[in-house]
Image 1 (cartoon, rainbow, N blue to C red):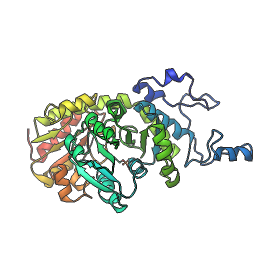
Image 2 (cartoon, rainbow, N blue to C red):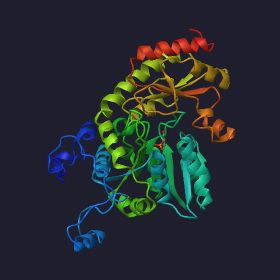
Image 3 (cartoon, rainbow, N blue to C red):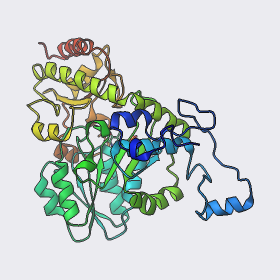
Image 4 (cartoon, protein in one colour):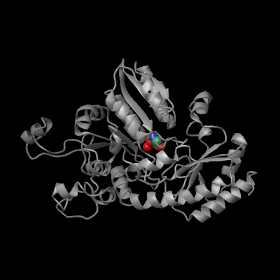
Length: 404
Ligand SMILES: *Cc1c(COP(=O)(O)O)cnc(C)c1O
């Protein structure tokens, strides 16, 4: 396998993220295929027994077993690292496998973790339920309150963990300020960047140490496969993350890696068009529902910060109706185009009621603190003509008792 037709890393490593999304990490076999090859193999053969021994000893470059390395997965890992501006990346079977590995590989009993309050439901389960079970204390803070991060830090604090924008409240964390507090105190910041992707926001440019992804969302972008990734320094990936993932096995399948490689080729186009569409839909909804949250609307409480950190508003917005779950469900049931679905980052517009789906596993008290109310709906805007999405919402809002 050749790394790429261009062999000069001083050139190829400096391509901009949209170029990396198409070409970064490409390695070609002897056939010179233009599209990345799919290597469906679990094992590798050696010419001689001494080669096997040398590879296991780390003295010979090469692959040994697909839980540890696979050429297709490695292309995706290099591509994501190059897009992120990270030294290295490792892919996992899902976003949650990535989050779990990013956290568990770094902590031990007696450590302390500070996490943002607004988070994907399973991320809150990691911090609220899993870590404490193994003697890792966690403090949950309002991620938008920079001082709260400083106040929560203790001498034994190992990690800050947060999403920005957060799911589904679209809370924005001040990356430079919060990662700065972490750096000052020797704390590692771990940022879940699933909503923005490196094309809208690169947390490492603001001082983040580790960036983790659900690649299921915008990176695949067409609702096909589950995937995840963790990016960091080569030292973090090799010495801290790798021993954990190689031995616990949350490995990404080569097929799913190949699908995400194909997804990344169109990420720049998709995320920018979907962000434009989302802004149009958000402007329509703003005049129509009691409350809406979208980072690129002036009415978002952290609009200025969001647009300093992000180059567009992203594909997701949240809207609120006054009639609680009954009215929220009625709105969903009246949709003709937008699907009732809890996925996001898809090229299709999808809407869900977080309190009864993605965040149903959390207690009502945690949901209320987070801002996930019974009248909240989360909407992922896809690649359809936004006027058709607006027509659909218009009709469904009227049917649910919210006429123009
Ligand atoms: C979806 C999501 C996850 C989990 O990713 P999976 O690929 O579904 O395991 C984690 N964090 C955020 C912000 C997400 O949106």
